[in-house]
Image (tube, rainbow, N blue to C red; front, side):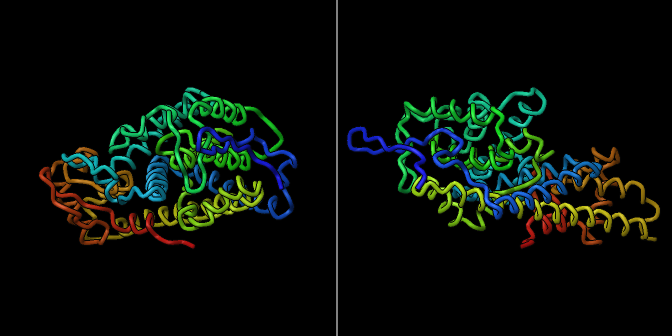
Length: 374
């Protein structure tokens, strides 16, 4: 059995200190089953990447998928809100509840960290990871968990007591070196190894799971395995929750990196298939809505403005009359009439009434975002 770390007793507490990556004694064994899974995952990631090249407005897909990953990754940690809340909150005068705030924090953390990687060309190092954690935990009661700082005390995770706090900076420095040094392992597999190492180190008081799953997406984008952050692996980590924790634990207890990698690759494959199908359905919805407006005799007079309104709604699937008026550069009454027409067609439904006015949601869009595909 492969030894993946050492146990060290200080006082009456026994800590687990993981060995450096990559696995050794023996080295990671990529058998035919694993390589077949890797090939399937890469194939579907490739299809997803191809789609991002031809979608006219990829930013709205990124927003939808980042929101979905943020929501699901947070749910794994018991932080629960809804996609509808995430889209609605920017239009409200009230502060979000703590769970919604924490999920919104996740989206901002991912956007800012991606900007560091893609625009500033920064490597994924401790400074970047700490900044992501600071953004993630800054509000919504996350500020009680030392945002942007490695833990200064011991923690327990199930049966695991991760390395003593004094060793965390050194272990994270070792992990950052592994992330940024090229080796012979495929980038997709390397991201899976980095995730399990991060979770074993457990460098923060809180937010480790969310940052660790974010690390997968960041590494895939950095290595160009994924062109944009439009997969949400947390969907399948959550669906196969017990297996997620079992395979993570088996790395430490049994040295079974191979079992974890097979599970992880199946999650990435299924996440890629899911994201592709969802994107296709969103594309088809827009085509259908456009056709309905184009073919309507009743809406013939204002057809051009209403076609523009469709595009706006996919950027703002929760909207008020004032926002639509501003985006279309039309009067309030004209925007109100467009919304009334779209409600009659079943595109929009009234969501709620706030102090600043009525809010409307693009109902079929949310149905696609929340659909179960497999």
